[in-house]
Length: 95
Image (cartoon, rainbow, N blue to C red; front, side):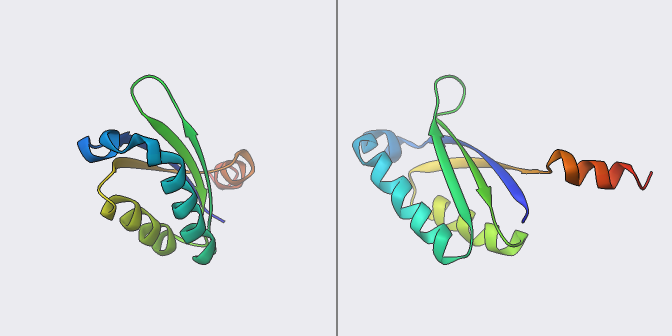
């Protein structure tokens, strides 16, 4: 399954309702599961307020999840598509 790294920051709305952040994360994890995806969230200090790691069957499924996250209005995200070491080795072997 494709992997995605999500870098996130709270919007003004998101920080005002920060006490709900773990509940929101559980809701998004539930949606991910319904879509056949998996999501792990870590809250961070520094440039980003959280980092999440997702696996989804395909880019279209991940895009649905990303749109749902953004539509809540609590976060702004940047997504990085990621490859494992084994996946990268397979690509590199074809060079």
